[in-house]
Image (cartoon, rainbow, N blue to C red; front, side):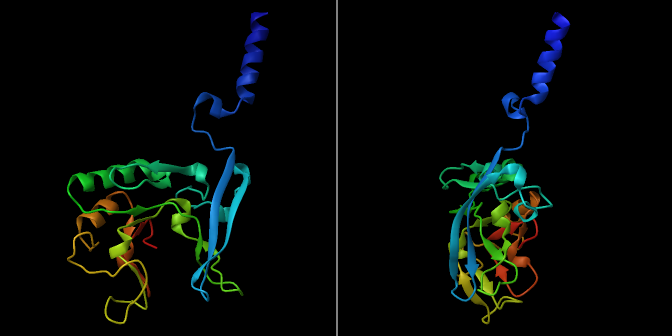
Length: 215
């Protein structure tokens, strides 16, 4: 009898979801709110809430390098007073939390951090002018720091008078809270594997932005 009971228990354990035992299980569901950026209207459109089983994630809903997904269930809230809470992928949360907290303790003027935000803001536009690719923010692997003084610029191979501010506030090096190459914030973010968008190649400079690729 004892042998039979042991076999039944083992079978039940094998059939029970890992969640019941507190392991590193996958979520059961995937939920996120998203939008598309329309390049002709210059605003977000097609706002919607998406829900489906986590097992049905599409390739575009997961970042292949980090394994982070667009799902709210894969995100973790970072709470560092006096900052407002923000979310990042749970795989990065511990490192980002430690880096930002240390910067604040050291007196760096960090006023705002924006993390997880799902939207199709990259890629070639479709016939209606809507961007088709998810941003790095969508996977929770990008953060924006002090966006009101570290704007996103277009037409900006090298920063100068020709650069056109398209989001956030004007970038003024030397003003406290402004990101600069070699500055404490850029160095700290680099230490956790996040490149600065102020040093990316191409026609845009995103001075608020940090992600594994810088884009």
